[in-house]
Length: 88
Image 1 (spheres, rainbow, N blue to C red):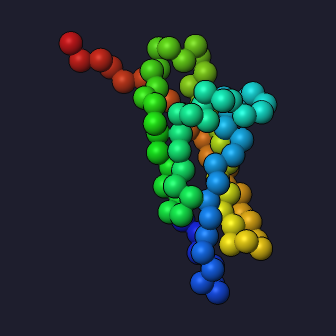
Image 2: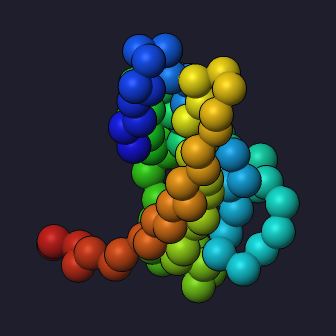
């Protein structure tokens, strides 16, 4: 997620509203699983996800906000965990 300001103001990024798809409110465990660099907007996964351990909840929703201090833009993000065949 990359935002810019025509006047050159610094942009600050915030990660909000992290939850499993269809759930409401922030999920504290998922909040720890992701981090967002507040100056670059780079989203990082801190915790690997296991498709088999997700109990059918394969989708995570969140929002990324960018602000220049006066205007704010919110981008909805959907992350879907995919099954990968394990190699023996």
